[in-house]
Length: 231
Image 1 (tube, rainbow, N blue to C red):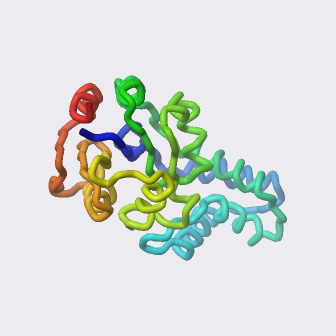
Image 2 (cartoon, rainbow, N blue to C red):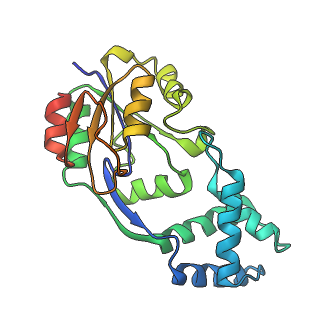
């Protein structure tokens, strides 16, 4: 019996589609920067954004995306505090979102697990300034016993370090814990490396990959079936 259920978020519980390349995003964001005294053309801003992200990212280290938006102000000689950098990042995120909703039955499934006495955690490769607010908007923020977001920890799945931080904080018994996710590398390979059982859920935004060697395989986000397996 699984006593601890660790979930991925995007593509596992939440269906999201974003487009960070559309011209209208960069047009509006350059206008926002201009209002703060940081003059960019849309194309200049887009190129600078992706350049900074590329410079900060490493394979298993996670950046804090608000640092990128702050650096974009600095490059134009504008002093930006953390609040302005975060608000800029959230404006960027809102402009990029084309679709955001929970998979049908996801909230009810989590409620069933917690009502049964299972411990339910979130372990997500994500940015807090985006994910916390999206989860609150979707009404799911308080559905977990704890939430681990990679931007808070300077590491991300499939790095075992990220798994171990959650496991060690809550003294989780690996033999009765399961990782549930839609990514064969980050969630399934990473979960197995951390000594966990695994459940793979194929969704429309899963990576294009061969089916992973998970303990449980679901070919669609059937949340009632997820609950039945975990219970």
